[in-house]
Amino acid sequence: MTHFELPRWLAQDSLSQPVCYIHFRPQGDLLLGGGACVDPRAMRRMPGAVRASIRARGGLYQLSLAWSLQHFAGRYKAVFGYCGDVLAERVDRAVGFVDTGHEHLLVYWLDDCDASERARLIAQAHTVGPF
Image (cartoon, rainbow, N blue to C red; front, side):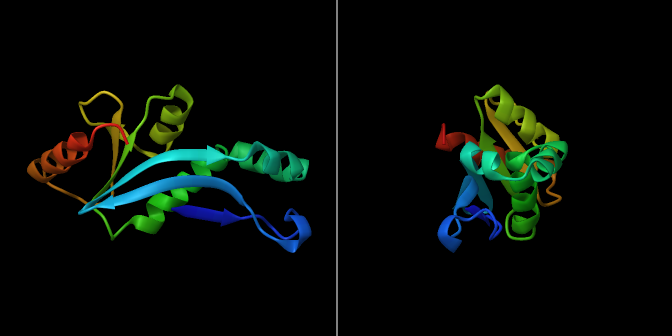
């Protein structure tokens, strides 16, 4: 799970709250990612310049996903996403996810695996089904 905290100026009653959430589930050498969401109310409370900066960099989901991939590098060989949403898929591809040959199943390679290892990992993720 990736959790970003709001800056103090945005937190209500000096408490923090999540702005973007991405669910990750480890499965051996790979990570399954899905169930991302962004709190639009938190976005509306941010100053206009902050919102503009976030949008210019691809949005909260893209920033969170890119950070997560860097965070998990070295721990897993790949991150898989099961994506049926056109907008989410656009963001996934923008950060480097690629097709696996299976409908809705995308992968981001964190390790320089050979072709047989990639095929094994893709098959492992595919057997999970929608996640």
